[in-house]
Length: 113
Image (tube, rainbow, N blue to C red):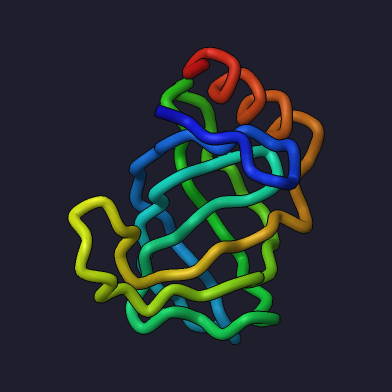
């Protein structure tokens, strides 16, 4: 199942490990969903809104990793008591996707739909 958020960008479930760089330090995370606008990343403890991060993750197309800057826009501390709730983490908005990465993510989203 996918959802169409208020932003107008379709968000699809996409589970993939990712690397985050925060203040020069690497943190491992797990993508939970993805859109052209951003992603939800399981990372504990969650990063605070406004935090700028570097992101690196793979897509199933077998090409080089997607590398982008992003900004944390919201956090989720988890523990919502529902099996369908997102784990602890944060929503990020991409701020540095290149045209090729946009095309690749767009292709993945379209294929999922």
